[in-house]
Image (cartoon, rainbow, N blue to C red; front, side, top):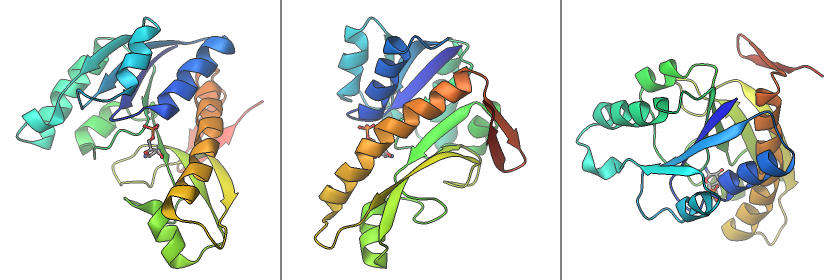
Amino acid sequence: KKIVILISGRGSNMRAIVDACMSQKWPAQIAAVISNKADASGLAYAAGLGIDTAVVVSKEFSSREAFDCVLQQTIDEYSPDLVVLAGFMRILTPAFVEHYAGRLLNIHPSLLPSFTGLATHRQALDAGVKVHGATVHFVTAELDHGPIVAQAVVPVKADDTEDSLALRVLEQEHVIYPQAVRLFVEDKINITGHIVKVSE
Ligand code: GRF
């Protein structure tokens, strides 16, 4: 299976997936890591491992449609079976999402369906929830609402700040995202309507 990973920044989730793919010898290869920002620090890590990297600078495009069109062309040069959004901070057009239907994964730093959008750790602290976490889901046209593949739960502590909570969640992201991608490349994921079933 061929995987293309999209990032916008430090790419710690991308690193966790790349490392697991290599060390656990998945039936898969990371074909490319693509960023919408030239200064994304994760690019150097991928390049250092000999993985193809590319940049499609989102701010140079006048419309979402134009950007997504070039992004799609860049991705499709690698004929991926799976496209993984790993801290890719762009909302994608319905046409793009449709093109990769059933083969586009994202990680969101909350227990969906709670706390969609941005500043999820702030939202969790403001809501006073006692548990928080992260969700791996398929991407559909409705933001942060696609079929859920995996979730991890962390406690919210009384003295938590956004940063301390984000760090606790991120550690779990690095566990569940590689696990979910591995299930996909091993053909163990079935989507029926909105429900994901994992086979053994
Ligand atoms: C992660 O918390 C991810 O859930 C969120 O943005 C962060 C990206 O971190 N969407 P990294 O680039 O993978 O280190």
